Length: 351
Image 1 (cartoon, rainbow, N blue to C red):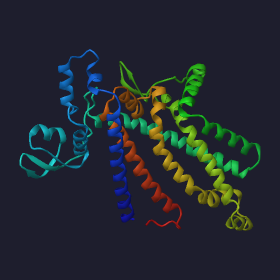
Image 2: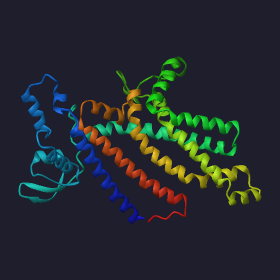
Image 3: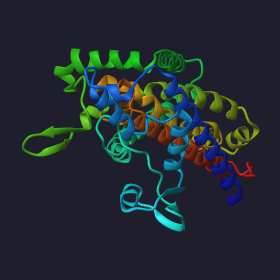
Image 4: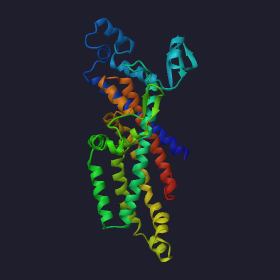
């Protein structure tokens, strides 16, 4: 297992490096000037040059790229002075003239717009996005598996047909379109009855109590984000259950006189869950990326909204930090899903 995890981590490192290369050079191809967006269109030349020098934008793109890799790398070469030490918080391995080879936490730089460290922005927004993604995934998994089992058990009945129709609708509706409809219907049209808002974050500011947790603002984004995975999980569960219910061991269980509950839950569902677990784990990482437009539509203060705002101002450090975080989550979840797959099915060997 250790060798398997090590192999996956090496593969994940290559993926992260590829993401950095593609996003960095793609960003530099775009006709945008972060310095001008930071200072405004009427700023003077001296101010623009000062900003470009501050963020290293005055250097060639290739030099900027290797400087960024040096900042990201946990083992890097930096200047041996107190200012650099305070910036990177590195621990010296050994000195090289006026420089040091040091070990440190990857440095994601500062936002061009707010001058805040990207790690600070991620620490503020990622928990909200995680809460949104986890609740959406729990909602999609529970409802999707229940509907899939019911559709398989009551095949070709109105329950089966209704579940299939609902799943097709859920798959067909893009998140940004479904979000607008759900926000208008539940947050505006039925607001006097539901008490829900068209927009709002997990925490609202109260002048007397400070930040206040508002769980109702989580409901509509959760429904919007969970619709597509719910539909996929429902169809996948139904398909796998129909296949498993035709197996010989199910006939044997029926011949032994086991109850329908025991046959479906203890025997059929467990054997049908392997691909469902894989889909759930893959969808969780996708929900973090898919939350971008959902958060923007509902004004939900999370990683997605922060990234969309950064795109508007060509704020590369925030964009790169967000994308790298999402890629890292994908890699970790893929490793966990492989381990869970082997745990659920003894026939699967990690190699």
